[in-house]
Image (cartoon, rainbow, N blue to C red):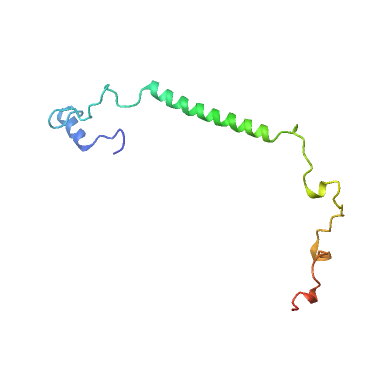
Length: 115
């Protein structure tokens, strides 16, 4: 049922002069609730939204703290790669164009399918 549209009972009651908030027995159509309020109070809504915003801010601050700690230019970079060691053999890089020059560490084409 769409909000704002009267039902057929309400239309009939309105035409006959009856109260549309009362049922056929004369009782209130809406259920009785404690506190005479049908929705959350403004205080409760503000608390829920405040907690949600607080958690969101906390997550953003934690993320920014972690990122700034990990991505820090002042942390010295250690040369731990094998080619960066003082005793490593330094070789010139190979040409990347394999189609024209081919890699140096493969078998010749005539020996590939021999067994």
